[in-house]
Image (cartoon, rainbow, N blue to C red):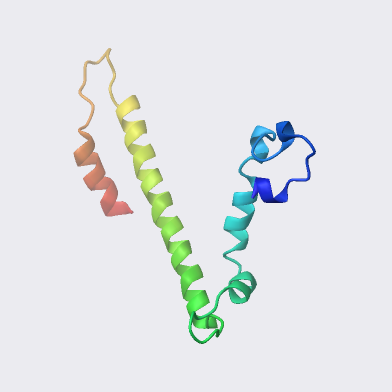
Amino acid sequence: MHGMCTEANFTLFAGTNVEQDFVEMPSQMLENWMWQKEILKKISKHYKTGEPMPDAMIDAKIAKKAVNIAIAQASQIKLSAVDLLLHSAFDPKLKNEAPHPNGFMHELRQHI
């Protein structure tokens, strides 16, 4: 995308030779825009008939994407909780033992 969209006169400023926080911008824009119903309707079609993707199928794909995002977020929350447990449960002054992560994960799964 950077190469196709550049208007730079010098290769030093073309392609991915841009400010670091701009490198991912084109892919992020396309990734997010692609999941808008109007865009999916315009760019999708059946390979034989040329018919656009039906609204019900587009809605189902968008809903599935939302579920996948939620699953990924829940996974990150579990990993964060385990990290917090492992780094905060042990007190060297009390010489207690930190809970085993497997037991904690089992308990955590019951709440998520």
